[in-house]
Image (cartoon, one colour):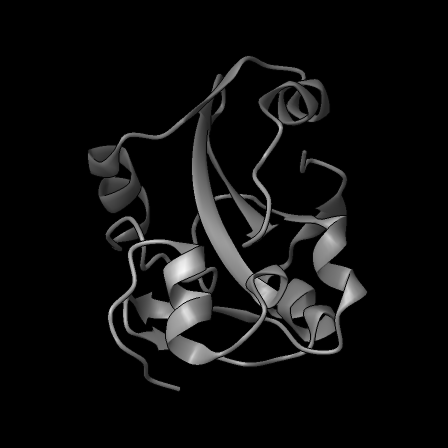
Length: 130
């Protein structure tokens, strides 16, 4: 589906009429082994201490340049599909029948079940949100 350009999950929810908790952000973090993508509900954020504990490494949010270099996408439009890095999915996205990650643009998204999202991204479901 297409919508007005959005820089944040909140803007995406406003532009699409979907609940922010159903918007899935794909956030890229740096850690000692490279980068990891974290799928996080739009109404919350990633807990860096939880993510650090899970990865057994210090973590930091990747810079916009690192995001583009790693994924080929710009910040705000990172699609979780076909990434060459590990993908983690916060367990809270599983609370919904349908979720909406980016389709690779700030004005395009897809709708699918959280189970299918986890399957096609080969994500590991973990508790990493605040």
